[in-house]
Length: 133
Image (cartoon, rainbow, N blue to C red; front, top):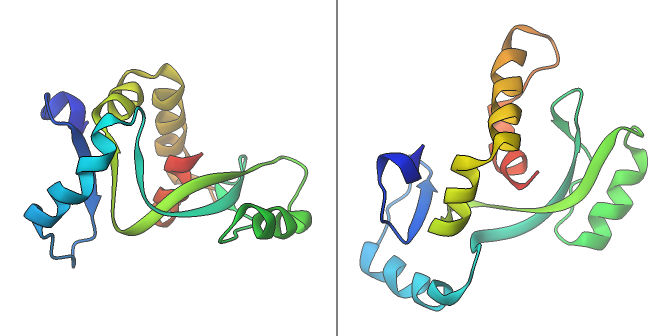
């Protein structure tokens, strides 16, 4: 949505509703990432996703602990994969543009929305994990 609604931005971010964003400091923090393609910014963690249940399984603060945590997950679990969390997460315009134009992402979002009436549904509480997936 954001790349279409606000074209021309270098970065797109989401912040928790109880966050105070220091914009001048944020701009200075983004400066090193301006030259990085597909920048995905936040506190990196790792998780796996049980795809038919829209639930996470095997979380870890690093790849090794996430791989160990995944041992108890069902066989149809995807991961572990990196994702970012935090009071604010961001991505560069090129990555956000890819998300906005990706048919795979559009399909994933459509499936998640359609799942809302089922017991196993996309839980928006896992939005950070889903974005990483």
